[in-house]
Length: 239
Image (cartoon, rainbow, N blue to C red):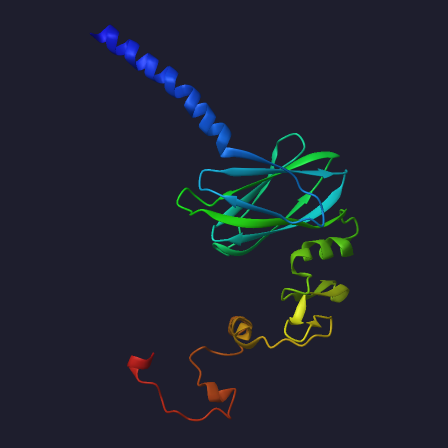
């Protein structure tokens, strides 16, 4: 009886093994080559991994944009030897862009792998395109520009950046848009309304002053800012 049982189990494994192999092959879908100025559209299921090839020369910088449509996606890049380079996953969920980069070390075909966040993701679609291919940055100034590539667009908010060394500004530039509605780009002279972001700097400055013995956190605020109205002494419940 045991021998028959082992034979049946062996036959079952032999029957299922090709099916498992086929399933694994089907899970990894070869989608062809990406080229600049051409957008690729594709649907994707939870058990699929889409692979794209990108031909790059040595020491090139490539910037990509993937628009998620109803499915949360991840991206992994591989070098021309098949070695993993980097993972990318923004907090945008199932809609919006996944922006990622690839820097080539050698001439060859690089791989971009696109796959759902997990097996619970629904059927969805995406658009994938190469936005930029150019020589990788060499100078410090160009390296800063390269870091901010994802935000240097007429379609996105951006930043004004200054690099300070020994108390002096050695590089500054603006990236992206200050106002999307009126097409106003960010420049090195743009004025930002930082609003509540200023609170953390205020707290840090106060703690530095306390550490230097120049104020006490239990002092009445009107000791330093007399124009603040007198709201009375706080009760123990307010502290």
